[in-house]
Image (cartoon, rainbow over all chains, first blue to last red; front, side, top):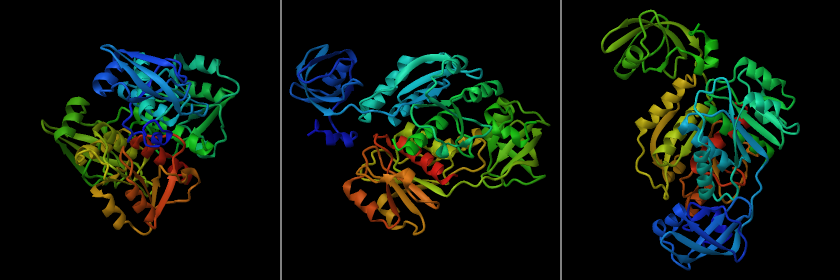
Length: 248
Length: 248
């Protein structure tokens, strides 16, 4: 029963391994996994020929694949049927200043779970952390997608400076930012997709940066409520509220 | 300037230590801190007589206190003026099944930041973790309150079984729960304070548990959107959306 779509509604109960792969997925295709994924399926999950696995690549939906061969360093599967359609996530970007290791990892995981289309790291004057490890962040997002039954994984873009971000900002995308100096409640803000949520570093934006964001024609200053939130909390709260208001 | 309220709007920039204490706080009162807090202020922050510190106890607002004496194992302060009023948080409880260490710690921190009045741990049939360490969770909430300029810290109650929770549920408090089998979008749900958000364990509620919750007269089944969320993410998203809708 594990390959049936209904199982996806309770992935935490499903005993079928679910993996993100790079290969294209289509009926009848053979997929060979090596390295860590082969070790995971063969040695950790003890998959044998005939066992089922669920695969997704972020583009072709989720597929039920049957193990056909287990070798020492590789495992081969044959794709059966599509067990889940490719999901379409709302066109919402999260533009966030890098945070210290644990918090940015957590934020990447949550951004994937909540269904953000793109994670864009933005360096600001008060950004105090070193260059983030994009591979590690991408791995956290893939793991979140594997565990939560997601078929899409957010893009992750190379860090850009706030100045560059604002200069190149797309004219059709709302730039929602939490302004400590005040703004309309996010719940009352009309900013449908395509949109982005911009969250500053722990130290907040400088007055000059805030003025620059406010000067952006697509800028939408919002308030996230009366309480001060850490940057990571503000990002997750803003994503959740925006999605709830948009109903997506 | 550190003791002025405006500094509270950017606590991450404030250099004034901010501590949660057990003592009652009032103008002119003397407060002596020992142990870890005395070490933190005296040895880590190098506070000297005349330096300012901000203190709060969860009841009396925030007070600017001036160091009067630094001893080897204790530090004494004299309370000046109230630098921040006692905040009133919405009457929202978070009822959550214990999660594994890192995730429940994180959830306690976020519940405090977002402004939950009470964290109530609920054991369910699919709860797989051991008895949570309430002292550790309380410490995480206190730290979050210290760092985010909060003057209130959520109560944390001893774990109860879901059965007991439902049997003793207060008749005037809405019990909002995310029902995997469907419910109205939380953003469209009328459930003002007093209210509570009930989140199950990673494995979800059993059908029998779900039926029990639905049978609770105060039960309000909601949907948190089309995507499957981890329990900790669902809790934070639900709190943020409820507060945004209530405008508090």
